[in-house]
Length: 158
Figure 1 (cartoon, rainbow, N blue to C red):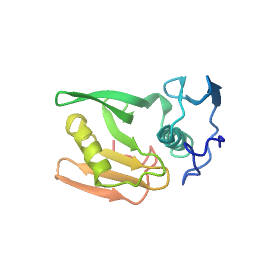
Figure 2 (tube, one colour):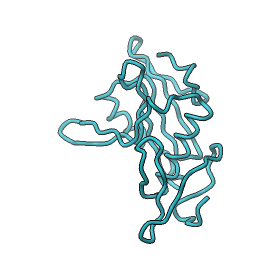
Figure 3 (cartoon, helix red, strand yellow):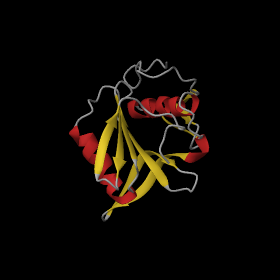
Figure 4 (cartoon, rainbow, N blue to C red):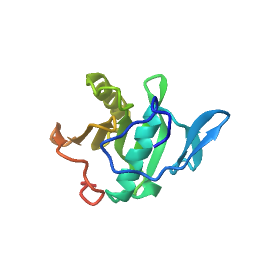
């Protein structure tokens, strides 16, 4: 873990082997999906650990994941923290991250639900690295349910 404890913390996720460097006095972390170094913020620390968790422990194909995915919500241009795409390239999961010191509140769920009005994905995940909430939306039945764990890629009903 980097020395900058203001931005990073121990998470409720497996240890990830992250490439971290200093650039002009600021820490950067290599984002394996964007294939470049990005600013190491507390939220980015959570994102990188969660992405590594999905790929290395849950079997999600890295080629089907994207970080900082742009979308339009009404007249506003927004960005999803991460998106999982199906093999048909349609989005199937939106992931929203918060820094570990930020509590997951209704506001975080409201944010991801606003994104989902546009994307209409069956899976939503919100995580601060300590708590992870995964929701499955069944559009045919008009219902949703919270799952007890983040499903493996094979367990997703795609």
